[in-house]
Image (cartoon, rainbow, N blue to C red; front, side, top):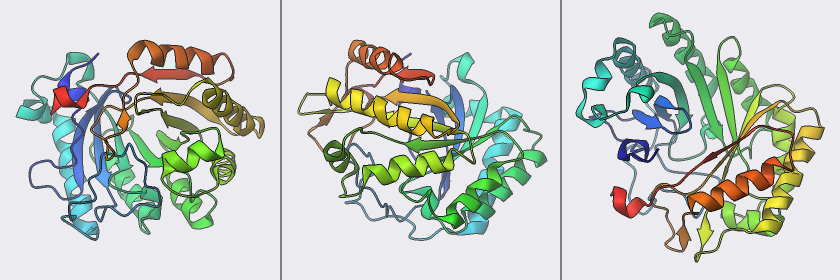
Length: 291
């Protein structure tokens, strides 16, 4: 399905500063986002990232009380169904008119936010307040800090209700990882961190494969990626799903592009044949036609 609403993931909604609603392909419904990194500072610098860091951020810090108030209001709109009357969501297909999750995402790495655990507890409280027990709380992470006890303590607050941790793994080889992460970091550290977190929490791995100057990463990289997945799985890590997708929003670097649908199907089949973890493929969308 390729409708504009599924590619429109703006983190600006009305006058809200930290909370925002989007209709998400991977959530298959409405996702209420929480931007706990409004300063746009991130410990990765992915070339496919859509965050424009050349533009100064509106907020440099999170006002915790405002954040809680904003997500409270959005949850009320979603619970009542009133959100579908908003012009932004009026054309949402019927099958997507459901609240799936509240997601900690935003303009940087959510696990760097020092009040993450407290924020998760507040969202759990609001989930009860609005009688939304089935709604998941999702935390997106690049996995760099999953070896930190304080980070895992914050993520442990997810337990006691439906949740998902979406950990990013975009590469199988060190050289390609340094390019796609935009930093000289250790791929093995990321692999080990995901394995460690998977001992304590259920993990969904999200992997974005773009093109660079029209070429995708290639078979050797995908095979190495599958080997990394198998390495993580062999530790006993609880891997729920691999989400394989490509570029769907305008990236920061002009050299980065989108893999075609049929090629994504080939990549998904190639990786699925090599791993013992469920695989889902999500297609991209040419952002020029969406702007």
